[in-house]
Amino acid sequence: MENYQELAAKQKSFFRSGKTKDVQFRIQTLTKLKELIISNEQEILDALKADLNKPEVEAKRAEISLVLSEIDFMAENLISWSAPKKTDTPTTHEGAESFILSEPYGSALIIAPWNYPFQLAVNPLAGAIAAGNCAVLKPSELTPRTSGLLAKLINDNFPEEYLRVVEGEVETSTALLKEKFDYIFFTGSTPVGKIVAKAAAEHLTPVTLELGGKSPAIVHDDADLDQAAARIAGGKFMNAGQTCVAPDYILVKREVKNQLIAKLKEAITKTYGENVAGDEYPHVVSERHFDRLHAFLESGNAVAGGKSDKSRLFIEPTILDNVSWDDPVMQDEIFGPILPVLEYDDLQQAIDVITERPKPLALYLFSENENIQNEVLHNLSFGGGAINDTISHMTSHYLPFGGVGDSGMGAYHGKASFDTFTHSKSILKRSFK
Image (cartoon, rainbow, N blue to C red; front, side):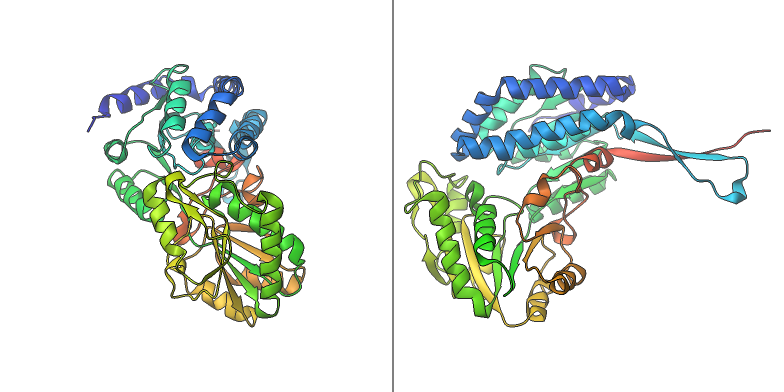
């Protein structure tokens, strides 16, 4: 297990030089990062295809375009975000003035996941750069082609004392977590998030944890079932369901359940055809994850899909009916192309069953009734979500993205990324006059 003490020391030394605090230096770095992404787009797409069999259109939209738009948004707004912010001063401090300085933490450690191995590595990296930090990025070993490409792009174009990609297995993350970084940003599972939080606590290092959970989609009886089915299927089956904010299960009003299932089948057929081609659909990341997902197929009845091929790590988009809360598929986050459908008789029943479980990262409600909307929004705790849509909230620069409770702590995207990697230093200035 390598010792990363020297790397951490180099980054701390470079940060102390003050170079990264210069706003123009940060904008230049973001611009250079953007140019590297654009000039290497095909290599990025090829890596995503090799690691996860991602179709090019999906990879461009969900991995590359999101990152480029985030970088543009940060570069455009960085001067105003970085400027000192004047605030009011209490009348008891007559003659004084107050302001807030945005101060980078120093050196940030970013540990990225495998499901969107480019976007979920580079988005937080851009936030760390925008805020004026040095950064060490640890990509996932489960997507080796993308990890290797990230290492090449960053390590060949930036000095290691500023930005560095470190590849490796779990032991590498463990070794990095022993060093005293100034900030840690982790995206991954809740159990590993707890390990990261414990390691951060040893050094009292602030941390952002982007975790997961079983995100419900509630479909009330007044919903437009055609649109609800299309939007749920789109959010669920993209990337073979390996999306932290994908609808994990549906809670539908009993009277419209059969109609919704029929509409979901139509939506899957419209998107993927009568038979989903395994060579054109993203595959499950590893045999271990395939085996875990395949066991979930024993829960309830597959009313759509259900076919699989371990040799290709392929599982069809699948809808499960007649599922109970005690079934294995309802015990953990699915993180795959399997969608259980459960029903409720009244809204309070749906609210109660969600409240009894860990707070989800996302929640989606399909209803035009404002009373229903308010009932759900004000009585359920979750990271964020959408009304009459799925996953779109995480693509907005203007909405902080993050979890609550078991689904995480802290947020990023847009200005929230800048704020996450920034310490707000409060100053009250008085005169001797």
